[in-house]
Image (cartoon, rainbow, N blue to C red; front, side, top):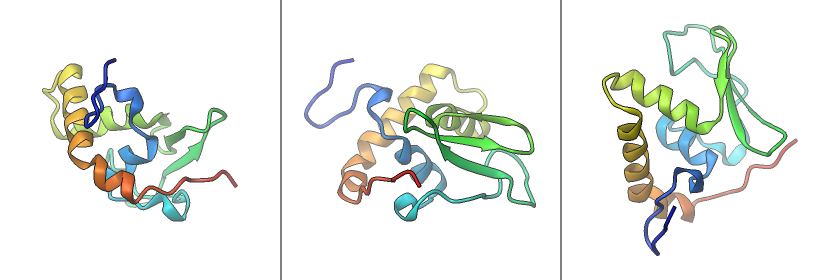
Amino acid sequence: MFGTKNKTLSIKDIPDEWFYETLLGLDFSKGLPSKINSPLRTDNIPSFGFFINDSDKICWHDFRSRQGGNALSFAIEFIRLKNPALSLNSVYKNILDLYNNTSKIYKANKIKIVKK
């Protein structure tokens, strides 16, 4: 998609870390959290984790529900959980709007996650 100097117009341009850090308030600068309580369902025992796949993308996995995916699939699940009536296009628009409103702060504090 087309981009401008100040805006990201393609969801593919958004870094994986941003999705998790912004939507969950996690800090990935010290590495990936081992397990957390699932943000997608009621969870009393931490069973939701993150891993880096072979393409160096941060993915998620819910060990209890056996669901998982990439950062975008997480964002879609998370946003639709809170707003089930939203269409997929509306979810994409919400993500892009949020990123364009927070990306300057995020980019200033960005630290690359390295595989261990």
